[in-house]
Length: 118
Image (cartoon, rainbow, N blue to C red; front, top):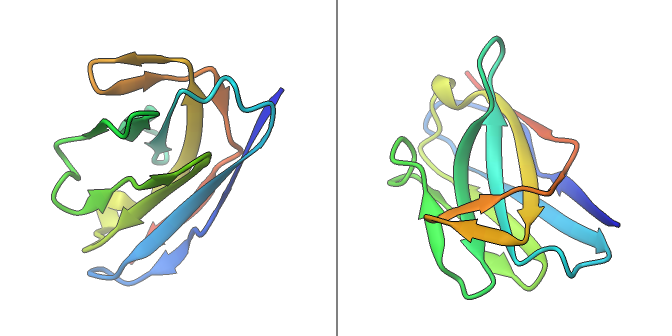
């Protein structure tokens, strides 16, 4: 059983930066790839970025010039810069076994961490 624990969310002013962390706990076999999703109020969850075990990465076009997704072993990060109010959302870490077209197909989800940009 895999548990994903996010941290690092908070409130920041527009133009600021945050780094989210995702720690994998428990059975780690099912973490061939990991990624971040976000969900803003009254919007559907959207994919943000992902990285596989070979360090191949994918980042959504909407954030690719501002976000990076470093991974160190089973710890995943989301480095966010030049944050804007539209980045306000709950950010979720996900892990899976299948890498498809620069996306990680999630099998497990974290509980989420809130990012608020004003």
